[in-house]
Image (tube, rainbow, N blue to C red; front, side):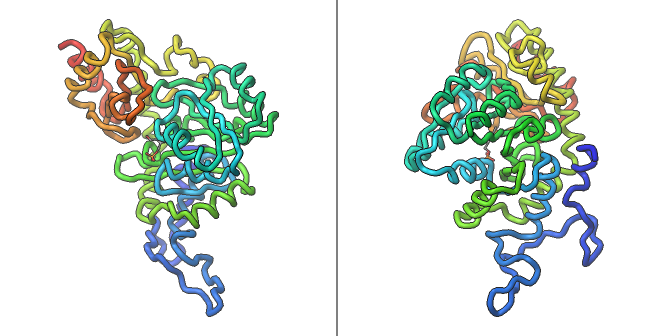
Length: 373
Ligand code: PLP
């Protein structure tokens, strides 16, 4: 079945009791069992699992082509839900450009558990190979990356990691399964901040791990989620199921408008650089063309004139709201260095853009006026 069809139908069986086409939301925290805790309908307690969550996990596993999925209270809870199953003494290889929350988790919390992290340029395969000269348990990829839009070759890196006995996880938040399917390229686990495109409306926080196999890694992450408790609420699961249904259609429009805006900005004299893998001059263009169906709707730009010029442009945009996050219907812009906490790594002249679902003519006109004045 094609992805557009799966997006509409996976986990969407009509309710057997009522025939309801839209799924019911099961809010019950507890489920009746026998006197010696015998399960009757398969569920026991909401922190362990519930029917609305099961539907979402079925849908996400189908969309990513995995055997099993686990949903979490946020993207960060999903990241922690995997990294915290690694035994003490592990070493993980992380991308030098990645979501800032992952960097803080790796620098502040993993060392407390005896897990070491090295940040590597994943676009440089020889550099990654060199990093494997010391044993590593996990290779974590984020492509395209946040916020520099770096692209790395998932299939080549998965082969390298597997040859060195490491697990491969890919943050697929920016691409979504519509544009890129890391498990088919050899990854073992896909992670999502479902807060973004999967939710699609900036109104639900969530995260997910999708496993290629229903194996020990899946079992360990499921057990940890049950005990540590960072589960997704049934209402959030329901909103995310609803987001899945329109995901493919939304991504097509997001991507088309991103192309129009990226081409406009790359020809504008006030813009120093446009980071969007769909542009032929982007260093990851060839790899992105080979492993993605389209190039996504996240871009970042470096504004000529440094930090003050970037902040001035951000303040003049009218349709692009200054706000963090991405993947919603509304276009957003953000000066990343200002939101990255005490140790920002993003260039001071960089603005990250999430291209929404407004008409691209209006989006271009908004940037045109902000850059002109
Ligand atoms: N991964 C990426 C690429 C992100 O952009 C984000 C959030 O912006 C996260 C992970 C973390 O997700 P959440 O905010 O849902 O915890």
